[in-house]
Image 1 (tube, rainbow, N blue to C red):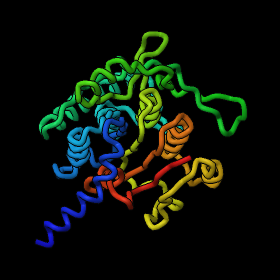
Image 2 (cartoon, rainbow, N blue to C red):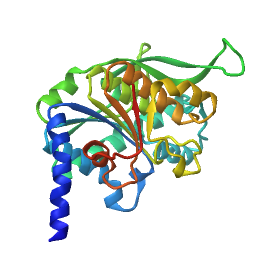
Image 3 (cartoon, rainbow, N blue to C red):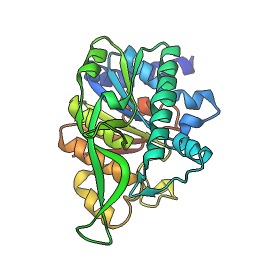
Image 4 (cartoon, one colour):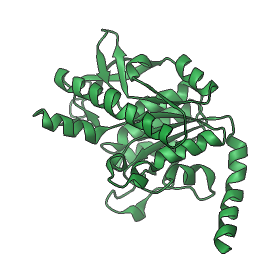
Length: 293
């Protein structure tokens, strides 16, 4: 009986959030090592959370990553993975692998998983959703100079019409993070950046970044140093201190851009934690790092 009472209490705690967010759009960046877990409960946990959101009439939109699968495919092709400022260096051979892995392997698998759990989903290649310009990074060692990292794009436009059609019909769009450049070629895009641009374009209420770390930590080796609440005004100092570094750079920069454009809150959560999306959205405590204005 106590277990049943505890379950009822959990539902009652979630009720105000369900009422508050009904009809709102939530963008979820789906990525991290949990996607490769041999345990189906871990591997499919986020998909179950997506189906729950659908059931309570919250509109989830998924932008997925797949970095580890891309790296494995590159290694099998004899290519070495290289990253600069959290961005994958992408030559012509690599971008073909990126597009194949993301749009034709991972994307349909996520759609299939959501549907197998009772949800509705439709997959999109990002090339049908995103337009981009070539991304050039600032060279930190040579002020004013730029670094060319190949076929890596910066999203400039989001085609929201097919996404809104899905939302209207209660279907979760699942989007791979590639984009079409002005030259008609496919570009690799950082999934965190792409997810933020989708959230901005759809005027989403929330943006949730899934990864394989607890959130933003002052010491990345010590989960006890987790920053649970982060105001965007604190970000420059954290960057200067090297706390926001490597793969956290695009995450935090995207979070700041989303908040400045009207997204209410951005959350950085650990996809390895069971039902971390639901815990973040529907409980008072939340989980991970919340980024706010």
